Length: 205
Image (cartoon, rainbow, N blue to C red; front, side, top):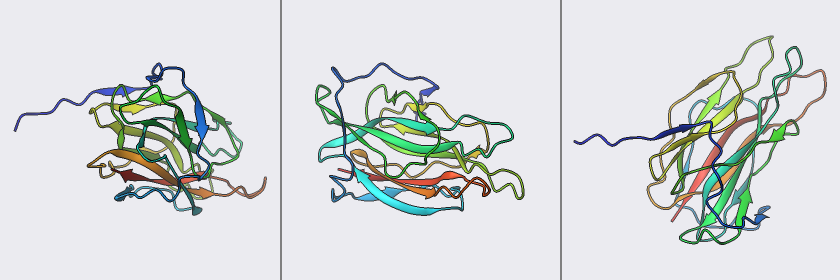
């Protein structure tokens, strides 16, 4: 079997592949969109609960993403990855509006720039997670990377703690079209917070 080259593109925020980008927040409007599978990883953090599903509109798929990251604060209670936002593009029409979907996000940090697939759509992911630290500070999920349908692997801003687990299954048709996050809600100043612990994505035709 001939080897298939994989293009690794790490830490790059591409120029938007869409002309005159106009973002519209889906905010659950399309949560009833039909999907044919969900994809997940096995190394998600243990805290929190699954929240709500947010979906791209029909005929739209995720081509880029950004993350909400809390910068490392040293001795303070760090939470690292707080949210993931998908940017959905209409297939074969990069001049259309861009819909954003994100499920629930934690309260800490700032949103990064958008990291885009050079071509194609998001189809699989890996999650970087810090295992429980006992009496020390926990951060749970720290970063995420995606594989695009073109074969490119993209990774934007992320935290420094933990390790990547294995790849999720890949969308076999279409691409990623929705997201659901597992969030550890904010407790108070005296309880260790971890924010985003796990995520799963949905595949649509």
